[in-house]
Length: 189
Picture 1 (cartoon, rainbow, N blue to C red):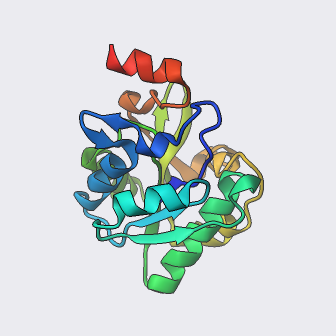
Picture 2 (picture 1 turned 60 degrees about the vertical axis):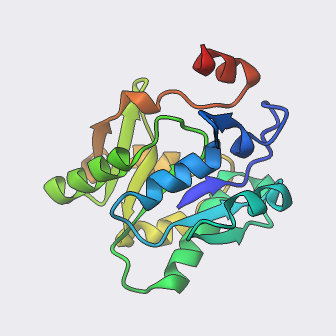
């Protein structure tokens, strides 16, 4: 599940469409997910959906729109989990990713899956910049908690609630995200 519903207020334009090495940021994230051993890939749009949808229309993903996107990330997670549940009642887990991390790759997803298999933990999260964050894998047993989330923080409380439930995978390349024009300038230097 790739969350791409935000309005990109700090960036000043839809960051989902910012090109990095000739490809829009969201397309890069989708292609990374499609190259990983996961299916289906769900993309959650919200603000700027009309501008973004044509850019990703050629990709084999489930695109859903979150009408409650102004509420924050939790509403997009709820919509994404709902779409996954409708797609298949047999999914073992969901990987939740953001569209604004240029370091996201198929290897990222494979690392989360490997840690899940090795530890048996119900949540596996990327660790970077001294904290746990997205992307993160949530086993089916956590889907109800994901659909009960509210507010802007997304799943952060689930990642930090019980350390015995969460396996961490060191992925320092994900510390960089693109939220502001300065972030973009730093990346392109």
